[in-house]
Amino acid sequence: MSENTTHTEDDYEKICYICRRPESKAGKMIQMPNNICICSDCMQKTFDSFTNSGMSYDDMLKMSNMPNGFGGMGFDNMNMDIPNKQKIKKKKTEEERQAEHIDLRNIPAPHEIKHMLDDYVIGQDYAKKVMSVAVYNHYKRVATNTMDDIEIEKSNMLMIGPTGSGKTYLVKTLAKLLQVPLAIADATSLTEAGYIGDDIESVVSKLLAAADNDVEKAEHGIIFIDEIDKIAKKKETRSRDVSGESVQQGMLKLLEGSDVEVPVGATSKNAMVPLVTVNTRNILFICGGAFPDLENIIKERLNEQSSIGFAADLKDKYDNDPELLRKVTLEDLRNFGMIPEFLGRLPIVFSLEALTKDKLVQIMKEPKNAILKQYQKLLELDEVKLEFDDSALGAIADLALEKKTGARALRSIIEEYMLDIMYEIPKDNNIGMVTITGDYIRKTGGPQIQMRGMATPAIEAK
Image (tube, rainbow, N blue to C red; front, top):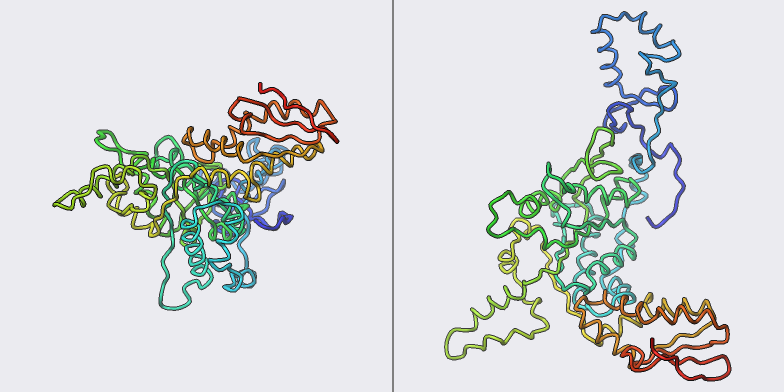
């Protein structure tokens, strides 16, 4: 995905017009007029059906030479027009695979991966450290390809953290830095096979699309399944749990590694979509979720352990513990509703911290693509300098904490206060600088406007 290459028709497999199987599955194709390809099996079935109907070979030849061909379905009226999103890349030869083989020396070391993440993600040092080591070990496993008797197991991850703490952003940044295909799926839409909703295997279809339908590239990619806590086992349900425990059961083979037949260019299998086999053995799965009420399960377990005897702790000891999620165990996750077999295939479990006021201020101004830098760039195009004083940043962080949606709240708050400024600034070409103050955020004053070469009173807050 790191290189923009131009692909020709020779780079893609031929697909049978009738059964929609690619050449790698159906065998050598028979080329017909109008770029129509038919596999030998379908061609034989077609001839057999005409033969069984009592038609002689001479009659078939006569019909094929007619303008409309076989019963009005002549090749002149047929068109093999396959959308690009359904075309399947040809598999590479052994020499090409060796040339593109992952070199251990080219895999960034864990401290290098973490250093790259530090440029984009503020805080979450423990989570970044765990992910860096897990990803490094995973791609070492892919590179060695189990060259000896010791087979290295997969480093699938489960990340737990409150909403807006940066779970999805961490994975997106990681995939961008490593230049590998990434698919992000939402577990809330997944259902057991045969029910309305996305099939479990649709997450692999999304990864294949992200890899430009290159199966071999997709087999070294990353799949991030968000909202994984939403497929927890439902308590006291009398109907079939098709979007809970059943989805966990169906995902076991994907997480461990198996050959999966997935549709190309679609999320559901049907007769008009070609299928391709993808092996998930070297695909890194990262699952994430907010797991609401998990803190209560952890507190209940900790209180049971420390509430016996004369040295018993107070019941409210863990109520304000900011690192409570770090104390999570597999037993707590089982009590939440995750089945043991599913948790066993996610060996690396770690938590993300809730964002503090200081961290929110850092998020606004320090990352390479920080939101304040984005607005400064926008106004810079109008030759206007934009500044936020410390009191304004603190006031914005306080408002974000009140919303309890983490870093997601920052954008909506800043958008609200920047609306009038972004509307008024283009009216006056003499404005040279705008300073956002804490009073403006608290609606007790206005921003400071400085004209080119002189200062003017602040605009009244609207």
